[in-house]
Length: 293
Length: 318
Image (tube, rainbow over all chains, first blue to last red; front, top):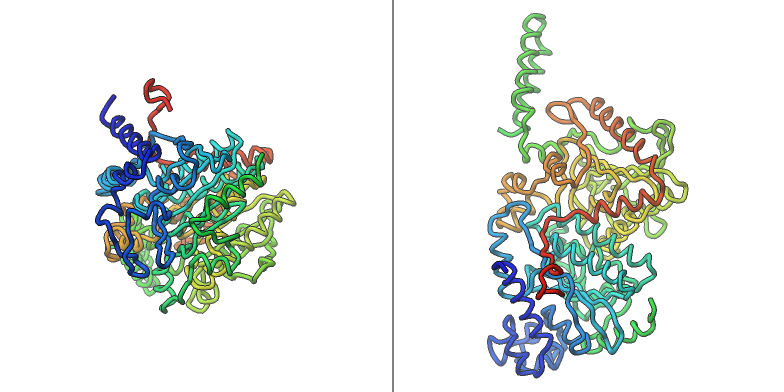
């Protein structure tokens, strides 16, 4: 086995450890990104102190103001699927550097070490309250969850896997959009993933898209907006153009709450806003209603 | 010296020639001019092509449509919200075959550009195009799109009416259409706003057009925090027709006259018409299902990555 393979395998094992957590203390040991800096941290919205150790039990929601914190993909899977039921698929993809962008390889390597992910998207088979489905999650800690060739390929693969298994698919999106470093290849992933949605839909299967903070750019303009059912988390930023770009274009400040989930609900682009604590139950119910699709 | 400065020099020479009345001198100057053009304007770098793609005098979609199609009839409105002037659509005939034409329209001067919103469509523009494409599918006629946009419009109204959803819906529906689709990139192909008309069986591109994920200025701002490095960004981004053909993103390059399309509009239109007719002839041979499946496969195969085969690794089998 060469070094590259070893690296892939060790990251996978690390991820599996977090999924196969036996006790909460074991889980906390593995939280190495945003949590372990201190036992108590300030909530970015209400500035109240929150006990980070309790965050996992609270599904990463601030106890005081109900703000939904950003989440790692693996945490999302842990709180969504039945314990031990997740089997990761689509392993072994290697990100390349098609435009020979300076520093891109190092950046990818850095994020891989930091997050134990191969890329900004993981998917696999899982059960939610006993209902089998394919579940895919984007990780915004990995280069803003941006969609390059590998993410596009894996998203398309997850739809194909769902077609193969005749299962519904749930995708949690969290992305800054297409990955600039891969240029035109990233743009083409929008067409590729949309065609994946079409083929899955043609089989009469269910696709639930869950929009989480933040979902913008090329991901909003492709598979994220194409769900049979579109759910959103409260207060998530969802839009095509980023707020800064719009402000520069129209030369004025954006109104409060613009491009947030509640705004999209009012404008008719989201079926329902679901609190993170109710998300698992809602998804389980929806899957149950669509059993056989 | 960039292409615009060279062009100015050529125009000065032309003016000089017009003022002269000595035939020998005129001929020698003309020869000199041709030589100058041949020497300096044939081997362009990426930034030159960006400047040409955005050139004020570059022919717009309606110029192409007027030359290439007979009896073009324009249709308006998306039946949901309004009519977007930055996208024009309708039906016309080419070689007596009826086709649906959809195009992003830039203006020729400031007033026209304000009316056309600098060819930056709102969601209603994309929904209009989708309506016309569905119509084309119903009546089994090919679709030809002309792409020339800096990108989808990033504004308040556009976001309120679901810019992202409109583009996504176009991508999905275009993948599944059962009629031939030919996309021609004639100027700027900017980001998702261009791709929303660009999911096609055959993507053709004028020699000096560009097609990219965002503008070189935006790329330089995001990656190097300096918009003045745009010309360097253009070089890195691989946005020219030749680079994209090499990568297999586009299928065919349409030749332009030396110095850019605006030096000889009619020659450009002729080349474009020829390529469209050739591609149409090939696509007309395919059945409806083949058209759809080859289009989906074409985009399915685009991507730049490698993969381990986990299945062949014994212990690592997943």
